[in-house]
Image 1 (spheres, rainbow, N blue to C red):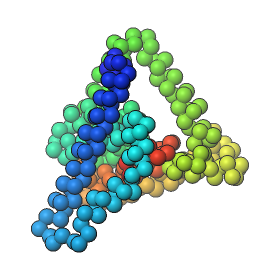
Image 2: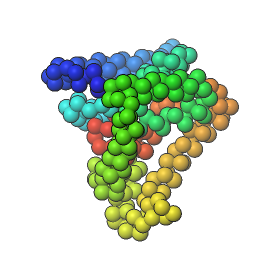
Image 3: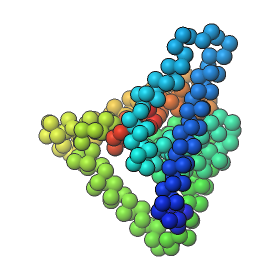
Image 4: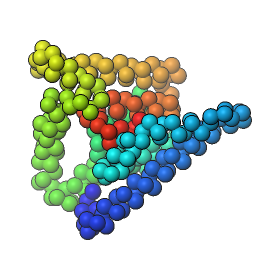
Length: 255
C-alpha cells in the first residue's frame, strides 16, 4: 500500500480497481484453461459451459461486494494462485515474492504448513529471505525504531477487534471460528477458558486439525513428493475460508 499512499486518492483508487479487474479476468481465463485441459480428447458434455459458469454464479455476491468495497481479497487469491503455478514450473523465488505480498492477510498462512508437507524447502527459504527484505523496507520507510511497535500494534488490534468473541460471532461470519463463537454465545460454558484458551476456540481448532489431516493423508499417499498438486491447492483454498477469523461476503473469494 505504500506506493499507492503517495498518489492522489482518485488515481490510487482507479489503479487499485483496474488491477482487480485484470486479476479477475486472469483468474477466469486460467480456470477455463484448466477445464479445457482436463477434457482434452474427450467428448464435451451437453452442459460443458456450466463447469465454469456455476462457480462464478455461486460466488457472484462475494465478487460484487469485493469489487464494490475495494477490498484486498481478490489480490490475495490471485497472488496465491500465481505462486502455486510458479512453483509448478520450478520457480520458487518469484513465487515467494508474490506469496509474501498475499500474506498481508492472515488466511494464506495455511499454505505454509502445506509447503512443509510437500517439502518445498527452496520456496520456504526464499520466503524467509523475502521476508527479511520486507522488514528492511519497513525500516527504511518508517525508521528502524518503529518496526517492532508496528507489529505489536497489529497483534493487539487483531486480538481486540478481530479475534474476540464479540468480533467473531456475528451472523455473516460463516467460518469455523464464526460458528464456534456463535455456539459460545448460545452456550456460555464454551466461553469459559480451558488452560488459558477459550473452549469455543478449541472447538474450531479441532475441526481445522481434521481438515489439515486430509492434506496430510493426501501428501502421505504419494510419499510427500515435492509437488504442489492443484487439487490440494483447491482444497486449501476452502481451508483458508473455513479457518479465517472473518469470512463475510467479500472474504469468500477463495470459494
